[in-house]
Length: 153
Image (cartoon, rainbow, N blue to C red):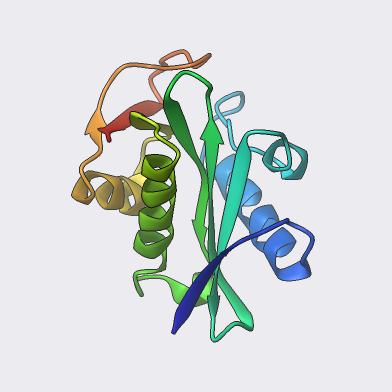
C-alpha cells in the first residue's frame, strides 16, 4: 500500500531519490536545458513536496507543487523510485498535487519537461490525466528540447 505525505526533505531516502532525479535530468537533457529544482529550490517558500511511501518504510516516489503566484501552479520534481516503476505511484502523487492545487484555488497547473524516450512515460501520464501541450509559461523559453503542458482546473 502506498501512503503519500508532505515531505520536509530532511530524510535520507527522500534526498537520495531527489539526487537520482537530478542525475537523470542531467543525463537525458542537453546542457542548459535542465530546470529541475535542487534541494534548496524545493525548500523555497511557495513549494510543497510530497513523497510516496510503500508501507510507510520505503520511498516510492516524489512530486512537488510550486505556486507561481498568478493562479497557476507548476508541477515539479516528479520521480518514481526505480523499484516502483509501473505501479501507479506517479499517478497517485500527481493526483495529490492536482487535488492540492484545486484546494488552494489555483486555476491552472503547468509543467515544463524534455523530449525523447526518457520523458515518454511521464508525458503519457500527464496526457492521460488531461494535460495538454501549450505555450511556455513563467520564465521559460521554448527550445527544440523542452515542451510545456497545462491542465485547467
